[in-house]
Length: 406
Image 1: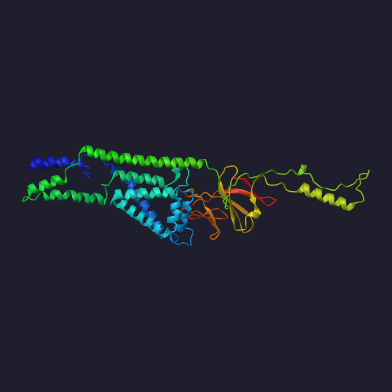
Image 2: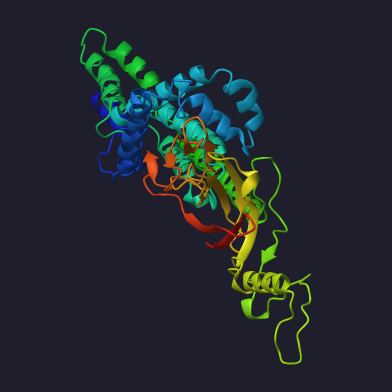
């Protein structure tokens, strides 16, 4: 009986998922750094939303509803966001906040770690389809790498090191051994132990591993293909929408006038005497002189491309445009002193398109609530820290806003 029991234990021992006896580190132990990073990151994301005074305040730019509305533009799930998520923004925001905290804590302490990783994957994919869908190329967006990290943890399974899952599994594994020590019911206990701990055949384990790895590979491949296709589609789209919904195209080019060759039109002819003196019509001669002086001394027009008439933008308002040379998205802002500033509309945080908010007198990113100063382009609210790119524009003598260079 002792020999049979010892043989049975030797057969069972290698199959225990949390046993490292005579084995190298398991896959779950190898991914421990990823588990710590993802767990801490999601906890930090949840706490950031929890402590943000604007996240649940509908009157503030950082409100979750405004973020969701911004996500809807160009997102493959935009209709769902507009019709379902935005009207119930507070509920969705609370679910995301609670989900990030639960996923992060579960992963960090190793409790229901595989389930937490699966939910982390789903949440990261959802954020990629919404918050960072506009980031091009796709590998610059943060949510897609997060999703792949969660997928690896889900395939690796429960974590044996520094985890509650490992501790609970050891307690469950120790119970049958303690029971077999009872001398009064040795045969009955041995039978129960044999039924409860019969190892799964190697072919079944191999099949399960193959299905898990193959399924994860297919999912990762499909997501990557979608992301790559989205990047290629973005490269083929060079249009930028103006505030009225139109596209900035066919912008006229302005060339400088040459003062030395300027010709005055409709200038009255003045008769000159044979001695070279001006005729008695002194008034006409004075008029000719003044007209000629005004033509030859007028400053040359600004060399560049007309973006819009200054009169088309009210003081304190803005208008979007596209740069004629680099095809970048930009926005013109008419300052309170009448001058015009031009900035890129690409958020320096994760590449979403910022919009002009008259109420806040700022450029606001709808994705994560970053904010920029309308006079300098400097970042005034995180998560953005770098300023917006500025463009050089001037107002010419004709009252046109002229783009000169990037």
